[in-house]
Image 1 (spheres, rainbow, N blue to C red):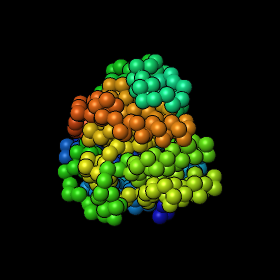
Image 2: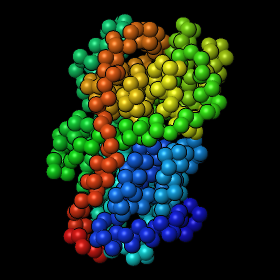
Image 3: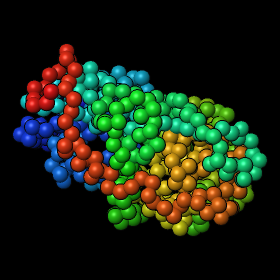
Image 4: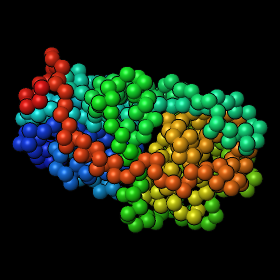
Length: 447
């Protein structure tokens, strides 16, 4: 065992195995892969703890910087992590590393005497969500539980030429189509995650309908709401965090911009985005651009740091490092200093809906179409051109909010207490019998 792969808390690990064996219930392996996982899975981990459903929180470790992992401490469950995989590498390299680390984890569970089914619980659309269930199925024969199942990108049939705000708002009345595999690779990841999963937990009806169209068994689908709503409630229940990031935004109303999708970090789209933000700032708009790791890497790769520095020094765009505190983000979003968010993050689209904050999505499609079509708290504004970004932001944000986002006042889209509902389902779930011929056998009372 190396420092990269270790039992984060050996006593917690052994207690979880003993609990599963004693109660004759599955042992759930809660996969914490990326920053959104640390945030969204908090309420589920805490609910499992309260209801005494056997589980081990498994930290993949592929995100290891403080700013990316701090949420598990802020949301009060970091002490419940039982294993750490230490995944490293690029997109393909870390997938290969995951396979080896899961083989190690299966061996540790067998060595600890587990006799009940070990069932992974994966969330969303990360590469870990895609391949943890596949590798685990090959290793043990057991299928997984997929939380946030059924996310599929869709977008309007549009030419995205700037023709005024009325033309932009027509996207809600346009015909929408599926954008297969968008965003990349998340669109592929979320599809693969369900293939070797047995229990599929969908946030909203559109997600469940996607899965039914793809041929999944309706008896394995459950509508549970979104864990993002739970995370927002957890954050709002804690005191605000004072930091320099928020202090710099204490005056005025700011457009917060978060960009990290690969599709938006190509040179042409990145230039349209940054120059469009600079032009909007010239019009008097206050812009704070968060320097995500993906944005930083793209600027370095394409030699475009000068573009960003020009937007900052010549046009007044405020550039900030990634905020380390999730609590700061949530409290800022609901503060009078937040005008709106411009983002390509699916989680932020959900959080904005829950908080009643105007959202503008920097994409040609969205894997949360319900926020545009049902909740009406979101509008698409892709980086198709400098003109579209600059004039679109200018007219959208100077219009009455009810004209652009008529659904801001409602909160019913993502529900409440999703973690509790999922914990209740897991407490009574009987896994399917394992496939024969798996490398690791866990003898128990199932199948």
